[in-house]
Image 1 (cartoon, rainbow, N blue to C red):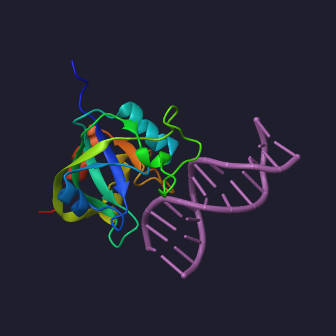
Image 2: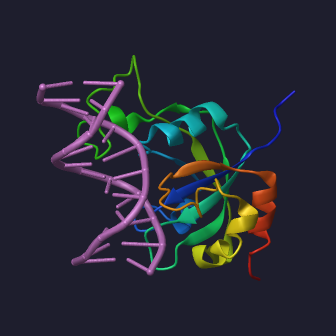
Length: 158
DNA sequence: GCCAACGTTGGC
DNA sequence: GCCAACGTTGGC
């Protein structure tokens, strides 16, 4: 029996990789995550088919830009082994990889970004620990509960 | 571009 | 194991 579908938030700077980029390529290895907590969520928590909210960070209108889904189990991020890569990690080896990723597949782009500004209006309902509204949180991959997922989707504008 | 908040590193 | 220094994130 397959485990129940889970939900996740994944942040990306649209200048580097946006929801439009994902729409164009269809599926993308989510490389470059170099934070242990985020890695653990991908490596230990994600299952193929899980729902993903694609968040645009560090841009004019930060917010959720669309939906995606987890399209692979976790496997080593090859950029950690590549000395020419910005994400190269000299302490990682193929025998003992340090960083993992999953493939992410495009589902749909929202007509309008669900802006962080709007999401903040519901910070209480989303809960204290929710990483988007928690003060100072920089986590780029984190779980979303079913209730949070529904609440956030309810903020989508036609 | 600024800067507060955070995670990681490394000397001790 | 502490903690200062450093680099990064990301909203504004």
